[in-house]
Image 1 (cartoon, rainbow, N blue to C red):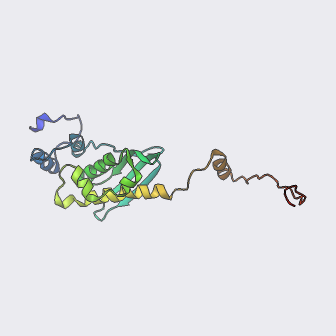
Image 2: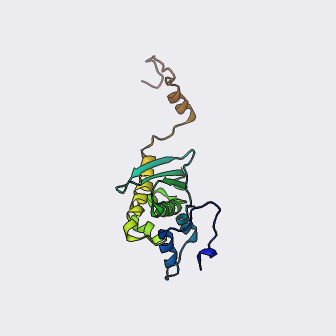
Image 3: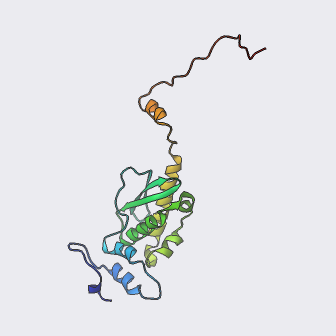
Amino acid sequence: MGKEDYPQDEGRRRSSSFYEKIKSTAYGGREMDFDLLAAAEGRPLNYGSMVHASAHARITGECGDTVQFWVKIDEGRVRKASFVSDGCEASLICCSTAAHMAEDRLLEEIENISTDNILDAAPLIPAEHRHCASLAADTIRQAITEYHALPAKGSLKQRLRQCFHLPEIRKQEHESTDSPLEE
């Protein structure tokens, strides 16, 4: 397959040396997920911030790349994950892979996600960019940690009381010691 066999969007950045490395290894005996490969073309899956996320994490790696993950959690599962990264194409691919892997998984599974899990699921990442998978794994795990650190949401009544700083109203107890139960 040549370059002309891959769909190209108007105005999109095309073909870097990194993309060429990945594309040239695509048929080297390893099955490729071409949706994830689209990240190398500048169209990463799950890219963008998330409104009404359950949790968020942001980490800047030693290489200077900053990665942010948002997760929407429902019934103990990550229902949706998204990310933003100012890093290189390898960073985008690793983050896209991590977000894709996280969706519809239990929180405990995400807490155990590793660099190797991401590298195994992602298109081939050059050795000099493998730290990007570590940054993606650390950031998505941090988002789950942040979720666990959030205070539990109480009832609507409790949240309104907290929001408007209202005192809790309790029923007054009878001060009488003459109770028929006490004998």
